[in-house]
Length: 123
Image 1 (tube, rainbow, N blue to C red):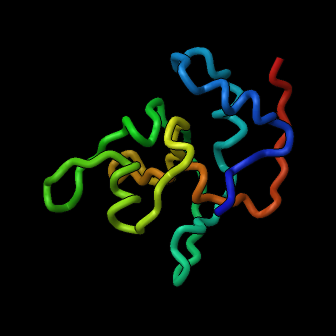
Image 2 (tube, helix red, strand yellow):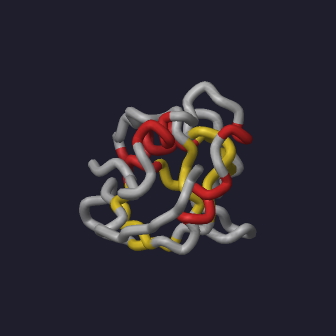
């Protein structure tokens, strides 16, 4: 599995999320991520590509969504039960790749960015 990363944003800045409130994460990260394309690596038989629309405020262990059956699950449990994948970085926010009407959330660790480079001045 690949950990989603952008060359200009250090791991320290991404890990700054852990234990912090959302307003501590600079808005520039969301601006840099929006529009980038990612490929999912958790489904071996299907290599889907998505365009990032944003970043969630909750981590994958806290973010809940409703299944078509009406049941609600968090993203971490959904990936564990559906894909037999234990997320190691479940404290990080998820990438939002769906529409507002039909949201789709992907943990960062199941995405690869295909070598795209994005530049931003953070400070």
